[in-house]
Image 1 (cartoon, rainbow, N blue to C red):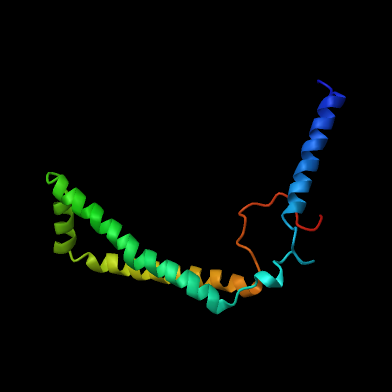
Image 2: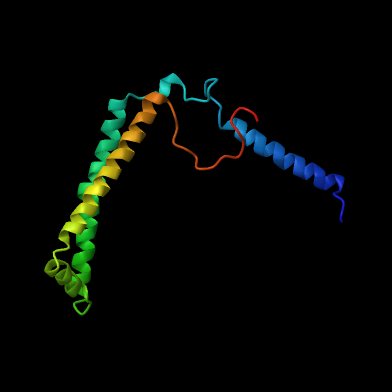
Length: 139
């Protein structure tokens, strides 16, 4: 087995010190509980206003426009593709209700996510980082 030299040991120590400093920098400007300062606190109404407009614009304006554009482009630019047969199959077998139910579930999930994100403002909690390098306040 190869022994670590003092240079390798110092490099390993410096990388762990850098990671610790990075972890400490995440909490700069926070209170003792790690929450955002009160100055950045937003009311739930402010969050609903911002995120509600954003979500409504994407759900009912941008996404349908993109979907309609893609459908029109594929239908008229490539008339030989089996898109027409697939849509006819959906219509003949009355599968539109399946897609309508999926859309209602999608709207419910969107509303639940919107509600959770709007509660973060008054609670002064950031969105999760999706990873954890170190416990925030020691082991």
